[in-house]
Length: 256
Length: 291
Ligand code: SF4
Ligand code: SF4
Ligand SMILES: [Fe+2]
Image 1: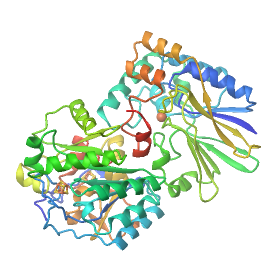
Image 2: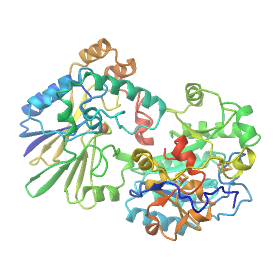
Image 3: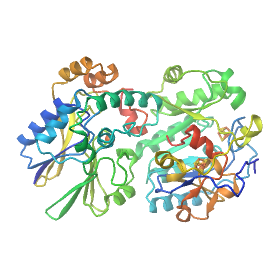
Image 4: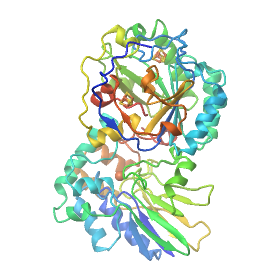
């Protein structure tokens, strides 16, 4: 089986479009999205429409819950005032620009999706199975906790942090954080990432970099008067916000 | 025990449901500290042994209990953790199973210590975070609170950690001497050579020595239920602290006998009624001790 898993889209409709094309070219029989369709980027409806038109089964992210239910904030779970300042700007923008026709759809997305293949149970969530906005960072998620969170799944797929990683646990179960299509992985590269499953391959999960027209995205973000700090991330591949929640090792890999 | 202002027993505070064990705090050195800050919320100091130091075995037991309960992260605190004679052993033990944050005043982090911290950090798959307290950008701001000469020593330690490739988080308690803005403080920390600097501001807790210095809590919370998101975000909703004297609700209340809720970590996984005056700082001022 071949399948693609998309994490946080954050309104990066250009990357989403490119990733859909890329996954189909690689022969994906199924494409899933793990939520957070809005935030950060421009024109939130465009991403939602690409997913809805493409019939992509989508897990609800904290952002989708917030926008869909008109909640007062995005529920990203930041603790720092500066991060919250930027989070508020993008949330107000996204909430205003998301068509009311899409809000009930966002509000009713499932918290979990699952499928079985060749005797293995795959489970998909946004943050973690127990909390929609729980951050599962590579260097801050102990094996024993991940074993627990897997429950009866053999493979647990998640997003929410924006950084991709995978680990095989002592029990043989696997956890894959599929990363994000919405913004680069704080590595100084402008591409974004998704996870691709090929059950025939020796290493079943591969992370696929997606290059897209990031100059155009930056242009659109400027036209929409989104913060320069966000535009900078698109153009440089380095995060400028949401940095306070990073564990030490992830922090040291970034530029800021 | 310090002058605890507690609710009259006929008035219960709001309740907090225990969600799961996210943060395991360990009071490794009890109340023993190499300095005695004016604003210390648990009256720690060089002679403060009201909460004793834990043995390495006790710390290891706490770690393995925490793992069995699915903890996500470990915090070592005190007092001053670097006074523990077997700190390296227990740091390694913690980092073998989970991410670790050490809360420290930084004064004892000499060249050799910074070196082994960097080694332990590099050897682990999990993150090692150091949270170093500083109370201003100048000796004039910091030293009246932390003691004469401490500013220069802390700054040296921060720079030393940075040279060893570590990225300490600087925590600042908001007291009257610090008017400096975050940006200024970040620039200051960056100036010490720390890459990806982080500064965390903590509200002042008016208990312990601080209560005697200024004033305690006069107002008292009632039992109106907390907003669900406030309740869920409280440290005591998903964390506990193990000390040499048993398991307590949270690191803030280890000197309060009524906050000792169990002998064992497993037994401490239960709901609470917030009947302590300091709870107001968490509930009303938004104190969160996690990194
Ligand atoms: S605030 Fe920290 S460094 Fe100061 S006396 Fe208390 S435990 Fe020691
Ligand atoms: S002081 Fe704060 S963390 Fe401790 S029990 Fe009270 S509310 Fe909870
Ligand atoms: Fe999210």
